Structure formats: C-alpha cells, structure tokens
Length: 66
Image (tube, rainbow, N blue to C red; front, top):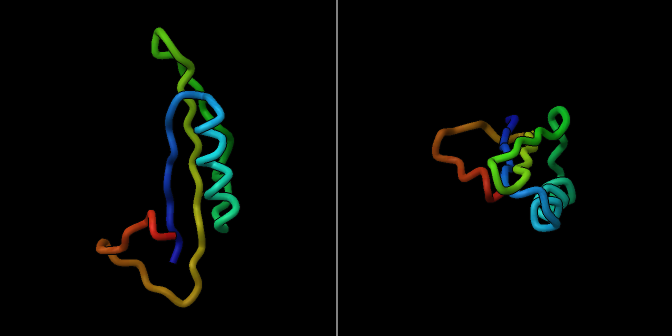
C-alpha cells in the first residue's frame, strides 16, 4: 500500500523535527516544501509518502501508526 501525509505548521525547528521523524521512519518527500505567510508567521507544508509492502490499504488504517 502507499500512504500519504502532509505536515504543516510554523516554519521552525519543531516543524523540521516532525518532517525528520517521518523521514527516519521510512517516509519519502513528495515534492518540495511550500511556504506561506499568515500575517504573523511563515507557515510551512511538506507532503510525504510511504510504501508499505504486503499490507492492503483500508480507510480504517491509522496513518500516524506508520
């Protein structure tokens, strides 16, 4: 199965750690980051995907378990 997630948040160390955690758990970047400004802070977004062999996708899957 192939899983997708998108992480968003203020462009700070916590955001980078969240993306780094996913990368270290086998997720891969899907394109480059996106940035926007909400009037106070720069907000970052990063899409990621992960291929999980020998498992079938179901809407009941908790993606955060991967």
